[in-house]
Image 1 (cartoon, rainbow, N blue to C red):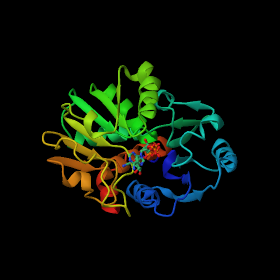
Image 2 (spheres, helix red, strand yellow):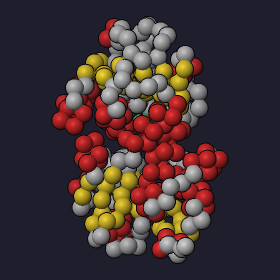
Image 3 (cartoon, rainbow, N blue to C red):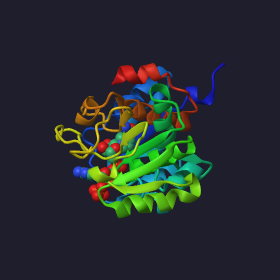
Length: 273
Ligand code: NAP
């Protein structure tokens, strides 16, 4: 039996700046192909937030079927949206926009995307987790981990940023501790370490977010959101771990499902990368 999506020509894309090295077009073209749908996924480089509105109008009126949003607009786009999912509201940032009736709704698929990949590859929930960084991705990760039953500590080089994250998420995620990202503050036991800073990312591949002189990472699983390079300095010193490629794939697949109603075979996305 055929459905309406079989005949649709999906117009999808990504808002952000700069967008030169984005893997999203490759992922979503592969998703369209795997689901035997027609359409395209285009990059929309937007130089300043004042230029976002026309794209949202296109989603609202049906010219575009869905958009991803990346740095630096994950928060800046919020005032332009008609509604937010509870997850996006709690995290205070969106990465996916879709149409519902005549409304543009913002969601955050980084949250379930991170959790799905961690559950695929990481340790069982319930222990202590330490998250490095307190920016947009850290907010999604801290929220996801807290909701999944981890006791979360967030450490940032500006401790006031970590404290603000903990305070903002408390109504949605319960107690989160905040620490400075300094060797003397990181001497407690944790079963999971998540790097949510860009430290170690190409081209600065020799950089490491784990402070020099901090205790060795002996008994924990390390999840590094960075995926380029595949083996960051941080992952090289971890007894077990994973980079963030699986999260990238999961958040893309979940966005694609919101736009098309189709569950993408993950294998097709892994092969596309
Ligand atoms: P962001 O909002 O800019 O936040 C970055 C955080 O890292 C901030 O707390 C920042 O502190 C901190 N930081 C930056 N440089 C640092 C340094 N040298 N030492 C210590 N802390 C530092 O960025 P984001 O959106 O959260 O993204 C963070 C990383 O996650 C990026 O590499 C991004 O590509 C990756 N990411 C991956 C996925 C995935 O699917 N795998 C999804 C989302 C994000 P300051 O504010 O003090 O600079």
